[in-house]
Length: 139
Image (cartoon, rainbow, N blue to C red; front, top):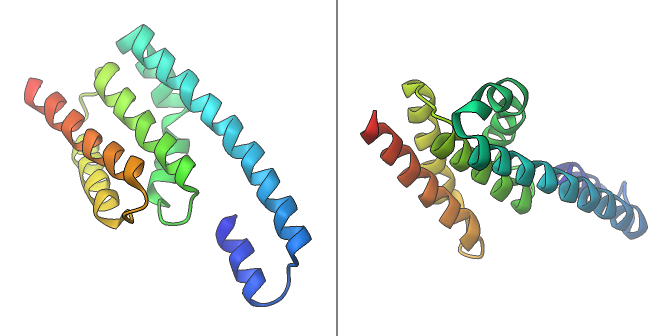
């Protein structure tokens, strides 16, 4: 959404009032998504491997799409996405080695891509790599 707003601004198709309204709507959506992410984290840390199927079936695809589009999503959404996968891998008994390799690759790519003014993104990416390494080491 942010990318669309920026493109339309460059083409003078959106004024400041429209932009402010769109930003407010994005803020509300992002806040709701943050709450969903927190709930998923609580499920993962509380119910551990018993939460695997619920999160794998109903939530993982949403966060996987966000992770794949990391360059175009809001920073807060990226932080929530990284956090979801850290909790999912660390607590839910993920054993899919290919998924773990892919996540490690994504975490390292995001860590390298993140700007200096995105320390939480970098921190979560590094934590994600460490979490994947720890889980793979135990397997």
